Image 1 (cartoon, helix red, strand yellow):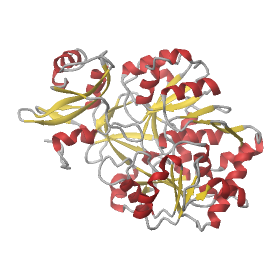
Image 2 (cartoon, helix red, strand yellow):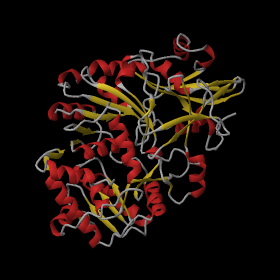
Image 3 (cartoon, helix red, strand yellow):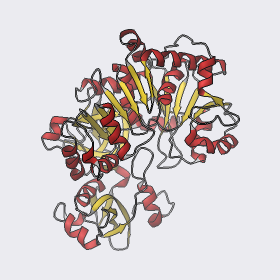
Image 4 (cartoon, helix red, strand yellow):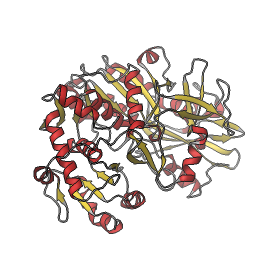
Length: 514
């Protein structure tokens, strides 16, 4: 299979159906296919060869969707850029991947001089924004208008589809190589679950399109011939308005987005009855937040997806019936395309209920890390993707993710998993968001430390949090210290950057445990 396959099918079966809605711009499948063919022709005329890497640095847009289709149409490889990155991180990814062509929108045009200076291999920059074309760049719309369409190369199967760089939470980013088959296996498995994505659906892109979480939705809707409603970036009111105005049926929201939407003071003003399915993931969600969300969206089913970029990205799914059965703390069971196992440090499977490393196998597992054979061999030992996450399986195959293995806190000889503590802390009525880390302690080796964002107008003390959490979890797991902050640092994918929180306690040392 190939990324453009769904577009060809939609043009054949529903050419005048709406494919993309971006602000005032609405385009049919026929129009998008013509534009993609012309953009692919322009890329070939600009010297893009088979397998060359073509990057996109931009907010969500209909042009982002066209880029994702035109690059493989031209037999090249996509390289979506994390929009939260600094210029040095962007430059590193371009130099590491050998990227030669960059699409950039208005939001990031100001960074072009610094990007150019650090990326001598970058030969062509295409401006895909709505404003004036910056000096030294080519106009996206002019390229489409002045280029002849070409035949689709139908790059697919085991060929490289894209290089997707990890968030860079530890050291330099790693380029995850995903094939067309990897991405389609994940999309087809998610659809086959029956929880998400149905023909004729209307999907809202509010999570960033550079990230595999949202791209999973994009893939499914392209495959099924659905409509893409696109807003530039997440904002609670914009999200609510788009759902109501376009009768959106499906969307992907990371937990912090769900919280901001359901707690927004204007949420009751919007008709949200069209929403049929919400997929969430990318980080754990507090049970109290999820329960509020189920009340705000009474017609929507909720599905949690656990996974990572390296598995394109879905490994397990917790379906609507599982939510109704009170399994909210579980990450679900292996998706139809995915096999899950828990292993010890010697890669030996462990019994049910035993915490170990979560490993994943299936056609959705990455080809490897770009230019990093040693890291690839380490991650794909024995044909299994080693996630670096700690968890356990129960007797029915439900996965429980307890933490990143490296985030486990050892306090007074006891293992404490921060996800469990975070769930307990987040249930306090004055807590809006939290992260739990281990910090050095002369007496305990490490102590459990909670970093908290309070509900507006509220405040908490260490003792209040300790007493509250001890009603939900064992006393030794309760935070021994609390820090109140205005906001938690998050990556472009909405994951809390715990390494940033640890820096003030552990410094820059790679070793952050006792």
